[in-house]
Image (cartoon, rainbow, N blue to C red):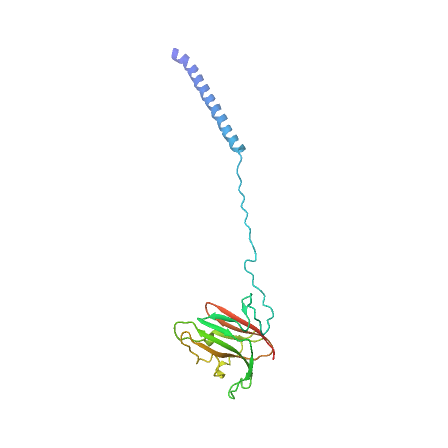
Length: 201
């Protein structure tokens, strides 16, 4: 009988201990939560600055027939020296005139102008300026008919092989298609060089 009388007291004490423990844990958790809310948080801002104009493609300007200064827009004038396809090439800054003399050709008696050219072979074996790497454009921007094989002294006529270190003095012949801006384009898979100049007859 004594045990039954003491049991409610034991249960009451146990309940009080559980309640006190619950209160302590609740207060502790609230303290932690409050601390996490009030604790200052460091914010790092990143600023990315984009600078435009790192590369600007210049608009080609009008070019005179003789321009002693190098271009800054990727084009060269007559009178320039440059390296292309293992060749050192120098174009003259004068223009001569002639006609196609081939009665069997549609271009017979067509007017042609020519430009002096000097080519040095910087390759380790025999080499020449390949005609299919050189293209001429007229004032309308269209490709001109090739006339090099009408002239024995043309650098592109296929008979101008050079040994390593040899230098050839020759001419580039270009079909005349009216006054205006002409372009000589040297181009292969790796590089393109454009010579732009004005022709007025």
